[in-house]
Image (cartoon, rainbow, N blue to C red):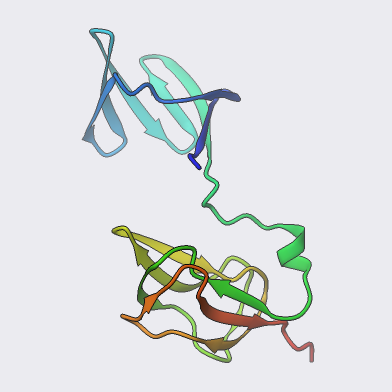
Amino acid sequence: MKPVIRIDGEVVSPVSHNTAVEVEPGVYSILVEGSSYEVRVGAGQVAVGKRHFDYHVDDPRQWKRSGDAAGGQGRAAILAPMPGKVVRIMAAVGDEVEAGQGIVVVEAMKMQNEMKAPRAGRVSSIQVKENDSVVAGGVLAVIEPAVNS
């Protein structure tokens, strides 16, 4: 599933036959049908000449708080989304974590994916260690509800 890009609220999709080259951080030279444009990209805005456009990327891979995960009861297992290799453990058994906090980083297809806690709680187990190979759907860690004192 690809990210959805919105410019001024309207869904757009990149055109593959146009050329874009980053000439410096946040500044691109774009060639569209023989015309060259300098495009500056900032936080939530794109500037082309004197025109400014708001943009937003809805990335389906990005963590989003959902009512089910945030308010759920019982244990929550963090699963590997695809086969890969564990490159970093970011929490330890017994740690109190917040919803969306990184727990384990898995590298798959040369991309590092941070697996995050689906809800606040306590890390009750970590099933992997660094450099372990994991299969899709394999349990990486388990989060238990925090015990209220």
